[in-house]
Length: 185
Image 1 (tube, rainbow, N blue to C red):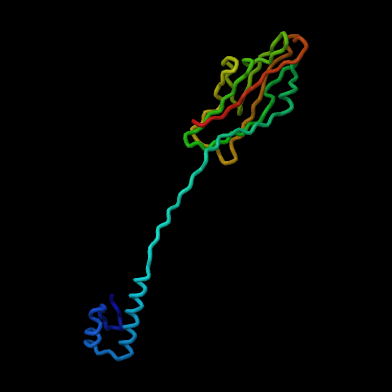
Image 2: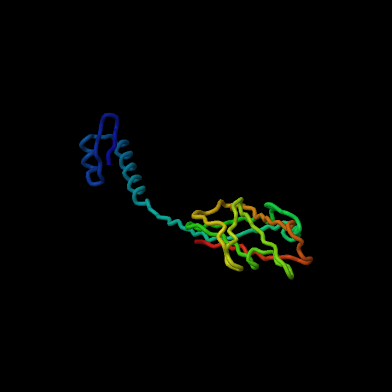
């Protein structure tokens, strides 16, 4: 420990305190001050402690879809020509660090089936054409991402196109069921 008194400089240790004080012939007040200072430093160093705090946490995986369908999906104007009519809005959410996929499948092989007839249709998802080459029930990939989505998710529209005006379709109800699935990679 080093203590400075103006230009006087002395190295003081607890063992040499008496010798140092006699050597520099300090007054009684200076001796008392130095003794108190040494005692205070000794107490401070004895009462010091060190602690470590470990921080950790985990994030649960999230992989979800929010699908909002529009009335046009259940009331398609089958006998007209429809081009890119929005039938649903889909919000994709995934926090998988390796990415995620979204697939779409058609129960009827991309056909609106009636009792005795059918009408082919096409879809677009987020403005990109959906491949309708897969068989009934076989999923086709409509999103293949290698990253996470923003916290609010990624919103895309699903739109349908068909032309029912070119032939006289038999009366009756026409339908298909689409299945949208999201999965982490």
